[in-house]
Structures are given as C-alpha cells and as structure tokens.
Length: 419
Image 1 (cartoon, rainbow, N blue to C red):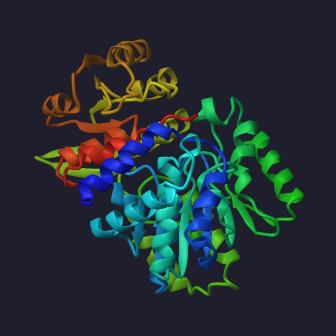
Image 2: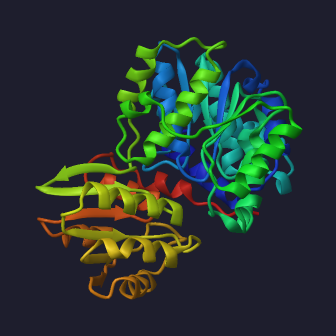
C-alpha cells in the first residue's frame, strides 16, 4: 500500500458516516491490544478553544522534557496534522502501516457495523502514541464527548473549554443539551476543569461532576502567567488560564516548574487562529471562526487590534452552520466583502452569504467570487484582509499562500455525515 492508497482507504470510510457510540471503538481497541491502557491522557472537549488549549498543554509538557502526543481535528491541510508526537507530524510510512493494520481489523466487523473514519483514526492515534511511548497525550474530542470515539480513555483530567451553540443537529438545540454531551467526558473520581461561564451549561457540568464524584474546578479570571501566551487574542488568555489550572491540578502526577510553564506558553504555535501573515506586501489575518461565538471573538479582536485599518473580509461558511448570524456579526467590520465557496460538499451558497452581508452592512461593497483564488487576486494592497468563516477555508488559504504544501485530497477527509 502506498501513502495515496492509504489516504484513499480513509476517504472511503466516510461512506460509513459518523456513528455516535463507543461499541465499535472499544471492540477495535480490544483487537489492537488496548493501547489506551498504556497511556496517560488529558481529555479536552468544548465548543471553541479546544485546539488552542490542547496546543498550550502540549507545549507546556514538552517544555518540561516529556514526550507528548497531540490528537486534534480537523486538519487544515494534511491528514498527518491530526496525530503528532513532540509536534512532529506522523510520517507517511506510519500512516500506511497503521491503515493496513486497522483495515485488517475492521474486516472482522459485519458490514452494517463497519468502523467509521473517526473510529479508525482514533485507534490509529492510540496505537501510534503507545508505540512511541508518549509520557502524556493531549486528547481532543471529535464531536461532543459522551458518545465520541475518543471517550474510551480514562484521563488524568477532563477539560471543558466552554459551551456555545454549534453542531445543534447532532448535540442538541440548547446550551444545556450540548453541555450534557460535552460533560460526558467526565469520569468517576477524575478531576474536571472548565472555563464555561454560561449559567445553564455550568449547572449541567456541576451536576454531572457531582454525580461522578469528580472534583470540579471552575476557572475564573486570568492568572499573571496567562499573559505569557504567544497566541494573539484576548480570548487566548482564558484558554491559557484553563491550561494553567489543569497543569496545577496535575502537579502531583507531573511536576512542572514555573519557568517550564512560562516557556511552554511563550513558544506555543497553533495556525489558523488569529494568524497574521504577510504576503506580497499584504497583511492577511486568518481565523477559523465557524460559529457565532467564534465570530464574536474575532470581531472583538479585530476592533481592538486594528481599529484604524481599512478591512476586506473574505468569507466562506459551511451551510450547516448558523451563517446568517455569522454574517450579521462579521459584515460590519469591513468596507469590502468577498463571499466565496468553501472547498467542501457542505459549502454555503456565496450568493446567500453576500445577501446576508449586504443586509448587515449596507455601506459595504459586496462581491461574490467563484473561488478563494479569485478572491485572493482581488485583495486590495492597503487593506487588512480577513479570511474567515471556516477552518476548511483557512486551511485552503494557508495552502494557497504557500504556508502548507498542497494536499487537496487530504483536506477532503474532513468531510463526514453523521448517522
């Protein structure tokens, strides 16, 4: 099997959708020798900020000399971004080897219960981290938490970043319902930490933590060390505070010094989140704000950090997101708006995005572009360019702007349909 063939096999697994439940993953884990039992985890769920919080935790523990595993999704360009050890992407050869292994194990399932893409991916990651003798694995949920394939682990700590409306078609229509799913990662007796401030969501998390006798820490405010975080945006200080609280709670299991923690925060990298790049004399801000809460955070950051800049918005949103309210939030930022399709089967209609933007900002010049490439060619030289609305779009932009090698067929692996 070649690497492209391995990717094609994974691509084919999308036909099995995203079935919620742990039965398949537990069976695959048993067939693979229970690799999750050889590892220590910090399990991270939440609506926004999961990836950034994971990146901070990974950077802090790596700064202390630990061998760190990092499991995140979606990927911006390359599938290999999802599984990293000491921030090195898994090699193509290891992807091939693990795909072959789990293809064979998947053949033992009846067709109607065939493992999905995310179930196979989860087991590939667990197997690889165990092989690599990782000291700690920073383990991000895929969707939700309670019935997510990642939830077969018993972590050292369960971390919930925040709760907002997103993926309502799968997780529920209220923050309380969504909190119930996210809080499903809380395990009996295992410390839980959250920065959630939505009262209804917090009440649900507190109730579940109490039922499971899990000590709960609610992070409020930002400790002085949070200012050390290298990632831009005021909201990253809240994510840093959450990471710092987690590290403090785990000091008995994993001793950390203050210089190690500060260095970890100062050196963290996480692309596609308020990432400012220069290209051909243009300033381009990339942020994967893909729900209303994320759009509000982006708007606040732009208004604070670029108050006098003329702004052009390149906007592409998936159709299953709350795009009318995302447009309503972001359109007032810009004097020029370019609505584009996302390179996804689930793309929103640029004509509809443009209409929503015109309604939200009648003074703006709004155009519809047939592709991101066309929009990038139209970028004014003297404006701040903001590319946002979807992490898929941000990944495509990073590739087009030369910050990632091309991997179009791999970006399509982010597509799935829940069943």
